[in-house]
Image 1 (cartoon, rainbow, N blue to C red):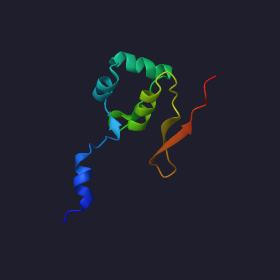
Image 2: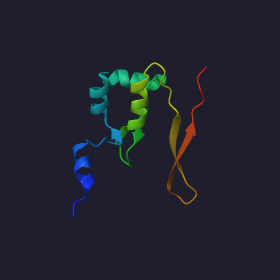
Image 3: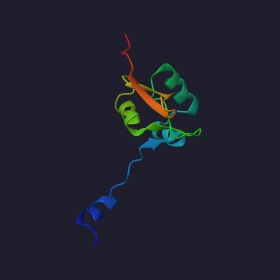
Image 4: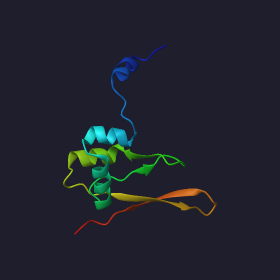
Length: 100
């Protein structure tokens, strides 16, 4: 039996957790080279790996933070993958020091 909230939830678009490069170009109106230049300068969110392959994407929250304040955007964390003690991959997240 359907729930009363199913109809309300069906009409709302689902936001993706990650955006791919084509989406970022469409949303920001920046060129590919401008996006990567800004990432290198620390003025745009960096990509995160989307699995063990080559696929990368941008977190929705990081992109929204940039959209809300492009001039004041600073990445909040860095993320790296390390080898765990049991041999598995472990993602380490660390705060980025504030710029001076």
